[in-house]
Image (cartoon, rainbow, N blue to C red; front, side, top):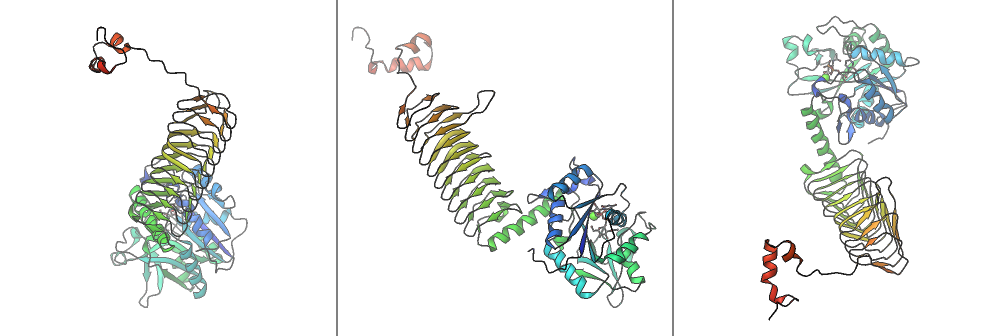
Length: 487
Ligand code: UD1
Ligand code: CA
């Protein structure tokens, strides 16, 4: 994808100053996400994948938010602030002014709200632009409904003569279905002088970047369009419905990609995979699985059904069933779920098990160690081969501080234990059922803490006389250890 056939002198300008009014959001439009990446990040990833050296992002609306996101993505990106949104031509003017010296070579102009546009398409646009020797190459597309878009106007022999904005177009021009995507490649020297002379004599009173096409034609410079068959890549997002539509399409593309790489996806429609996820061949994804963030799945593993993993690293041949997890590591051959909750810092060693209704946070569970049932493991280190009994709680929080506990190698702890942290159980030690372990257990010891059982005879009859329980106890009396007098 990131093969780079382009010589180095390409400067990209990413326009992202516009308002996202129709999103009705406190969050800037270009920061809304699909496939785990904001739209501006999709744009920046595409641009850098096309071999661009210098990138200028034009910010304006919600600029603190947008600017912070761009810096977090790549602090080397130059940011130009467009104080007033006077149109795409004005935005490019502002971008050029922000550079220490005028760019040389080719300038690629793209938008921050066109998230399906790929690095490959930008590379192809640049290759076509260079090979054809044009001054301006527009990325265009044939669409069914061109309403709202700028139209590509061609002469009798099919040469591009202008871009006409919908609002400025005549009836005949509005019939044209070839639209301007807004993305274009242009020679830097021409761009610099062309945007300097733009005028706002149009229906919107804006500086149109698209007017540089007419100018180039007047100057006798070669212009043309690179027609993109894959119309999805030119689609912008203005509202939440378009965000969902493009999100589903991108997910469709990602599931297709992983299937072509040897991953079995039983139900692509209910499987969601973020852009940065990595999946090895011979992984099986069952319905209702979401692999998010930087999740990595090793070969032979089966994930799902109904599992959400964010930034989780899963080894080979693991099984993860009905699990919700984030920032966790699962070794080779592990089994997890059904109904497991993996919180940040959960690490499960090779062949280990985190079973049903088990929550694990900031804990390491050793190789072959098992926490099979109904437990909370927080801030603990469990040794290799240890087995934790059903219903165990690691009481890690004393109300002020969190403390760690340790369970030794091949320790066997019993059902319904509480480990009051900080406490440690030695290698090979055992605990009794219901034990509350407050003090360290030496290696090889059995720790019991529950007192001997005491039966208070007749308690129910004395204290709860009119209940069904008392009646049941009376009915059972012949079998009772307390014989009725006279019998
Ligand atoms: C623009 C094109 C139109 C094309 C359409 C594709 C112009 C004059 N028209 O239309 O031919 O079919 O895109 O979607 O170029 N922006 C700024 N600052 C501004 C204005 C816009 O940064 O002052 C940014 C926006 O954030 C957006 C992009 O530029 O990312 C396009 O702006 P938008 O208003 O959507 O474009 P249109 O004028 O509708
Ligand atoms: Ca638009």
